Image (cartoon, rainbow, N blue to C red; front, side, top):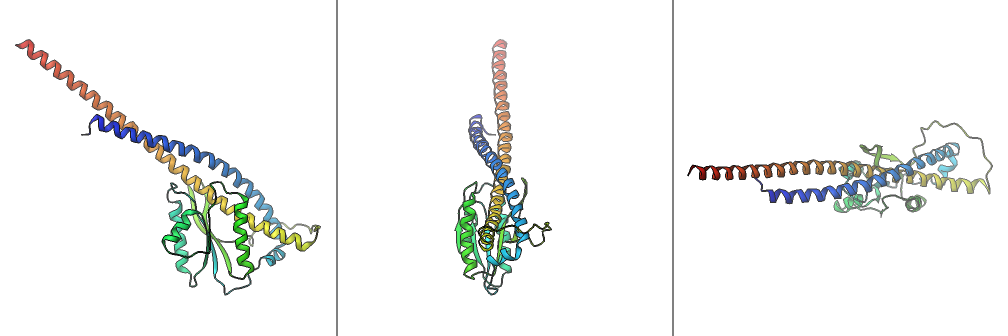
Length: 279
C-alpha cells in the first residue's frame, strides 16, 4: 500500500495537470468561439459567391480552366498545426494515405498545417509546397494558397484540384472528406438578372473568379481550424474531468489512510494504558 507521502506526491502531479488542462480548455474555448463567429460570417459570404458563380458559371470557369487532362491531380491537404486534439489528424492522414494508394499516377500535393507536413515527411512523400497558418487563419492565408494554386493552373501543371480536410459536423464530429474545388454544379440557385459591368465585363469576371476561389479556400481552411479547436476543446475537457476525478480519489485515499493511522495510534495508546493499569 502506498504511503501518505507517496500519495501526496501523486496528488501534486495530478493537481498540476488539472491546472494546465483547465488553462488549455479556457484558451481553446475562446479560440473556438472566435472561429465559430468567423466561420458563420464566411458561410454567408460564400453563399453570395455561390449565387454569383451560378449566374456566370461559364465565364468564371474559363478564367481558371484546367486545360491539361494528362497532368497529375493536385491534392490540397488541410490539417492542424498542433496536437492534443485526439484522433483529429491521425484519421485525416489515414484517409489521405488510402487516397494516395488508389492513384495510378503520382499526384501533386500542397499541405497546409504542420501535422500534415510532418506526416508526409515521415512517409517520405514529396509535396509541392507547405503552409503554416495561425490558430485563427486570416483571409490573407487563403489568398497566399490561392496564388500558388493559380500559378499551377495557368502553367497547365494539374488536371484537377481536390481538397482533403476534416469536414466539420459539430463539436464532437469531424469527418475526413475529399472534395473537388468547385462544388456548385448541383446547387439549385435562382437566376440573377444581367448586371451592369464596370469598368468592363472581362475585368469584373476575372476579379469575381478570384474572389470566389479564395472564398472557397478560406472556408475550408476555417472549417479545418474550427474542427481542430473543437477536438482540442473536447480532449482538454475530458483530460480536466479525468484529473478532477483522480485527484478526488487520491484525496479520499489520503484521508482514509490518515484516519486509519490515527485509529491505529489511538488503539496502541489505549492498549498501553490498559496494560499499565493491569500491572
